[in-house]
Length: 152
Image (cartoon, rainbow, N blue to C red):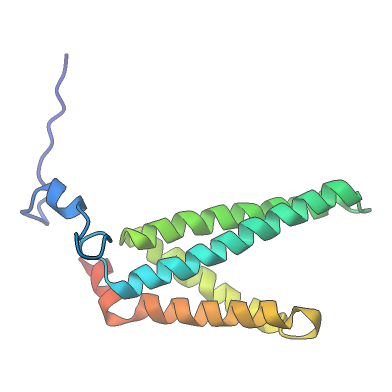
């Protein structure tokens, strides 16, 4: 029978249990600013939209059997997978994980030109929502209280 030794983190003198607890007044993890929580909510909504859209595209491709069914179904699966990935990144933001900032910024920067292209025609509302979500998320992730979490 072997025992695994755990060494305390050199960065923190507080026990691991104290840093993982939630703030009793707000219910959110201790040390996570409201700006980062708000960014996680926006990214979570983006994830939900992508999962719903990807599922709809996949089911529609299967039911209608278009000429390019493989492309249609794979596009739906891709959007569905992107939504799941966004959900994972939103979870990372909510927890203040350092690895979540890069993917969030990259995804939001990709959403800006895509949202702009969708502003014309029947997709104006979708394009506007994408632009607003991308700008709001970028601001929330890059404000000083949020960046302080990622520097720790």
